[in-house]
Image (cartoon, rainbow over all chains, first blue to last red; front, side, top):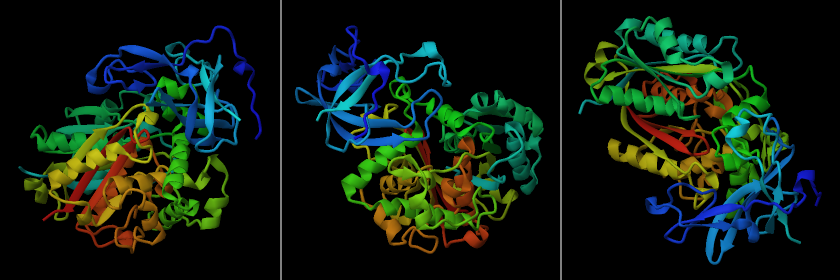
Length: 135
Length: 384
């Protein structure tokens, strides 16, 4: 397993939550939507960074857009939050993972260069959580 | 109700073109009008399918520009953007305009100019349709394909080679399409040994970046014979939307937009999947041909790969898929692709597909936006 350790991975004391929204029917969505199942508004939040997840699928992208690391290891993972499953997509800290592996979220201050792509830098956040395999 | 007829169709050469978006759109539009012996000012509505001329070229207002260039004034005009299903959405709008009685003669032109951008830039323009939670991780449409293909192969125990066989089949079909970007066959080894783009998918699992345009002329079926003896009718059309955030879908290997849009189209046409003789599917990535053929009900969930292995979807098979060469071989100028799919079905149903001709009375086109985020399914029958 070749480790890709980005300097931005360094865990800081001021990590924002990996915030998912909880809805009245008990479902949890990441990212949050203003209206969830049955058109209901969120009733709370869940910090997914406190949980571990299972890899549903993964890829390594080699044709990356401007400002994105190359290669870019990505995965869709599934969290189990007290019996309620919620999925997320994100970069992996390394290649060599397999479907079914367990991962944990690791904060990164900048996932791609906000200035390099087509999207207006001020229109969204650029930090977030990568997924690191747990041995 | 008077059905909507397609009485004319055209498409330009797909590939790397010198013309810019206005010229490409005018080229297909002018050909379509000339073939039907129609003047621009006979048109009542003119729709232009295009995803991103502003982002690619800095040219907006293209519907107005093309209406002027084709002397179609004062026809009502609008640009239709539904990302890579803009073409299908344009077919939907053009169909609506005639079916509702708002227009008795509608021209639809779909087109995109992309090749002047680098692969990285074009990839980013297309990836800009993603949710911020996806975009900041550098998620692209090809990476969605890699993620989904890996899950599909894992879940259904399908061999990696089955995906490559989609590329081999569609390249073979493209040899007989004079408008296709690639008119050459590729063999299995070439696909399997090409560079990785989004593991497990390789270069030949992906469509190219393409310039080009296509056009359709629509009118009520009751007056179709005034324009031509050979026409096709849209007997069913449905549009549906899936989640913007792709990972929120319950089953990553199911395209709900395909299932839902085709259910509407089948019901409207009074037909079932078994009635379809030929289909054009949105094979932007090889994996999408499996997912769509299953979502459309042609094959059971998880068994689309077997149909390719067994030759069912070959041009001489039981259900030919992508006789045009598909997006894979023909190319994928975003706003043109959905229109060009209907062009191919029109050619098949009017018996004018030349060496690509198959026996068909009923055909289907399925145009996908994003990674199944928006889908248009169109069912057509030969005119009586």
